[in-house]
Image 1 (cartoon, rainbow, N blue to C red):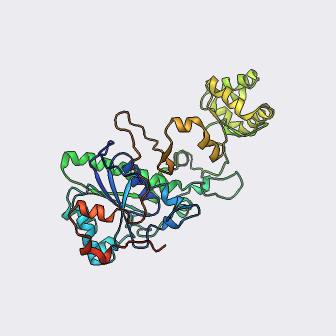
Image 2: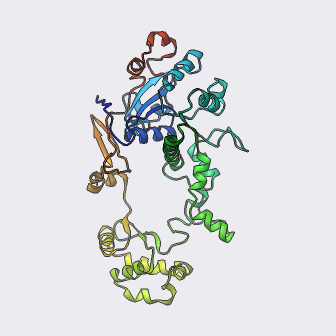
Image 3: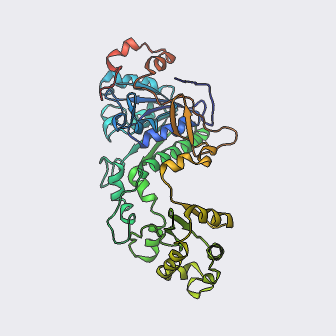
Length: 396
């Protein structure tokens, strides 16, 4: 198993204690780790529950865990005990960042809340990820992605017109919350250069869900009309929709009048662009049903992949509707470094590309408590002194 802690990446030299579980926090930690931070994952005695979220499994971990925990070292501490809390504090002594998603009030109960940590470690950037924050009408409530998709209105605009609300096919709120946490951490680290002080950073599922409601919220602010489900159709742009062909479906994303004129030419119906109903995007939106019928007829006998390639070559945004395996097999996916193969591990690459300090993939997702002795030895801590709070095997 490969492990390489030579400083590399934009965050080389930054030390992170990642005591989060499930998805938002671990995804945040993996982003930091991919860009060079030394991220130590601290798991509870029963392990991060996503180790059991399978099949499929590889060793002691499900794919769900494997997907967001590479480049980290792993220890397990029973922080419900005073000795475990003491050990956490010792790990935080040389840390720059602390990421956690404990139930609201847990750290405070242990005497390790944000104020206490600020007094003890004034340079520490403490990032808390939670469902709804600590206060307000929903303060302290637990939050999971799908439930918050429902509460923030995302499901209300996802689904077919006239059909029921649908959950997004990926845990989009968890992922965006993790990215928002990274943004907050990097902002706080940048500000620390000026002030010398850390600060408390908060990212919540609820805030992240609301923040993604574009353009539905701006539409509602301006019109007062409650947005509804529209299937694949865009509420503001037309034609911006999926269309069947003689083979696979394609998605047209026509954002301006020039692209619409080109679309009509490529599809062999240049005169369609001169139809007074379709001269502008606003007019096309008013007559979107009629326009869709025209485009359905023009695409019905075309090969999906071929017509999408023709349109893209002509400058019209378009793509075939593909399955996951097709995406993985696409040479461009590999060319962009979005598939990572490392010592028997396959994962998804970083979408953030830096020219001098790119992301790197140095170690596979860790096994449970794999690096306990290593991490403690680096800090001059005798594992024997904390043996009672250092689980050595998962109990999933």
